[in-house]
Length: 166
Image (cartoon, rainbow, N blue to C red; front, top):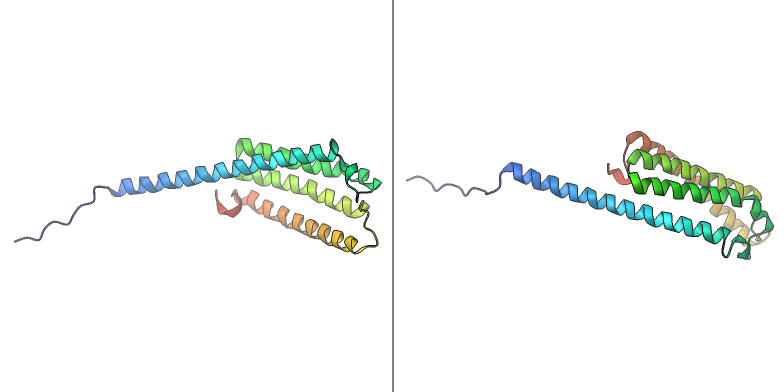
């Protein structure tokens, strides 16, 4: 008597790998959708910030900003616009190298704004403990910007989104 035949799977190895590819495709589509949602959210926030700073209520309504703010507002606006433009481009194209390039440009604009704020220091907190807090936060922002530029440059060379997704 011979041994009974082993049960055979109704799925071939090809269909299993096809199922895996389909799952991976859905996962990537979900990531792309999440990234696009992030770009759209960031774009809206930046446009609202631009409006709040320049139109209503305007930077003049902030009680701790001094008249020296006029010397930095151009750099701050340029930073906001650069990030908004990068987000708009990412929303349309969603390509890793293009995102990295947009990040470099936007972070550079932000770095210029932070350095300008450091130089002018248009905050009405001089001589108080808040001056130290503000300077420390500006320094952290400057260092973080430099790190962000380096990270984006590496992503530009590697062609990968943050977190390793391609």
